[in-house]
Every structure is written in C-alpha cells, then in structure tokens.
Image (tube, rainbow, N blue to C red; front, side, top):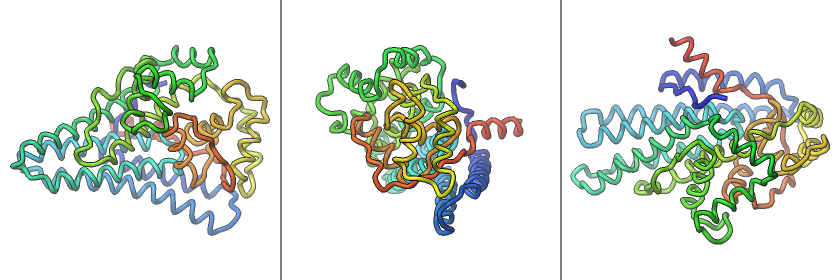
Length: 349
C-alpha cells in the first residue's frame, strides 16, 4: 500500500476527473438495468459527480485570480484553492464508488461555496476577521493535506492486524477512544467536532499520526466540519477493515444475485453473508461498508442510498441500525482513481 496519494494539480485533476467519468460511463452501460430511465439516471449521476469536481476547481481558480493583487486576501484565496485541490484529490482517488463520491463532492462543494463567499464578504480592514479567516483556510488546507499524506499508510498495519485478531467491532473501537477522550454519552449524540476528535485519536493510535492538530474553526460556517468528519471516517474505516480480506466467493455471490436488473440491498447483503463469513466480516454493517466504500474484491454496491448509509455509519460510530428495506442496488466494478492518477503523473513527467 502507498504511504500517500499522488497529489495532482488543477490541470491534472481535470484530466483525471474526465477519464474517471468516461470509464464510469462504460461500466454503467455494461450493467443490466431494469429500465432505460434507470440507466439514464445512473449516467446523469456520474456526470453530476464529474461536473461538481470541475465546478469546485473552477471556483477555486477564479477566487485565486480575483484576489491575486489583493495583499490581504491573496494568501487566503491561495490556501482555499489549495484545500480544494487536496479535497478533489481525495474524492477522485479514494472514493471509487461514484454513487458515494456524489455525496462527498457535494459536501466539498458546499464548503467551498461557504468559504469563498466568506472571503468575498471579508472586510480587509477588520484585522480580527482577517486573521480568523486566514487561520481557518490554513487549518482546512493542512487537514486535507494530512489526509492525502496518510491515506493507506503502512504505519497502521500492525494496529489493523491487532484489531482483527482481537475481534474488535467498529462500534467498540469508536467507543473505546471516545471514552479515552472523556466524552460521555452515545457517540451519535456528540457534536460533529467531537466525533472528529475521536476519529483523529484512532488515526493517531494506529500509527498514522494526527491529521487534526487543533479544533477546527467555523468562522466561515459549519460545512467544513461535514467534509472533515466524512474524510476522517473513511480513514478510520480503512484502518479498521484493511486486514479483513473478503474472498472471491463473496464477490461471485453478490455479482450473481445482482447480475440482471440488480437486486434489493437486503438480497445482496444476504448473498454475501451466505458465503461463510466469520467474525466482524459476518455482519451487515461490514458488508455494506465494504461494498460501498472499498468494494468486495473489486465489486462495488451502487445505489442512491450510498451516501446516506455511510453518513449514518460515520455519524453514529457504527451503532445506528442500518435498514435495507426498499433499497435497490446494482453491483459493478468502478475505475481506480489512484491508479489513473499515477498514470497521469508518469505521462506528465
């Protein structure tokens, strides 16, 4: 596993986003949908995920250009654009499932809009607010940079092995570090900023080090907290699940049950669980999170519910019941953004 993501620049990210979108269209067209309108919806959603990434890059570049001659706001605009670039790298390279990436890039877009508007409205003569805005831009830039640097780090391998060997559940892992921080009550009832602290504590304990040094500022609003909570949750899930290796039999079972016209999400989970999974793997939470976030041996569970379910897991620390009632899904491979990013870097150099 790589220690960190290859960090692409604005131009390279646009190329990556387009290549991913083109390959997603090909993959989607190979799925046997129940109807043409449903195929069209999945294609629209893939295009929407692509358009959102291009949109935030456009907005960040325009902001930097707008304030390039403004001595006070130019450095803040630069940090905001850097944050957007790092966030786009995370979204395109770590979230292969575009039905989940839609949710992630929407969060990033809302935050980008929030901080861009805040900078537009900032009075450069109000030194207190200038400092707050500058500090916030640096905080989010640095946090997202740390996430890219510590993605899938080998430093956490022993910690991940220990989690598997001792049979620790995701919910128990979260609860353990919540207690360590002295935060009382149910995890789902904590403030989102407190949840981030718990996830950061797990990331640090795993050997990857801190990704959040200080409590995040909300001077420009709270949308950034949602971005960081989701990103931290993904990293904690990677740490927790990386040594739980699902087998080809599980892949074959879910592909078969959803091969024509998809299947209910409950049927897909049931097919996976029927393949003699053991330990934490033999749970609906693990199958759902693995299938949506990281794939089951290359097969992703696709559906409009993806963002909602993963948000529910991350916001509850795995304690919330996950209902599959009425949810229809498809199963398909998706392009690997990190592999494509490495190819772009190689071709550029």
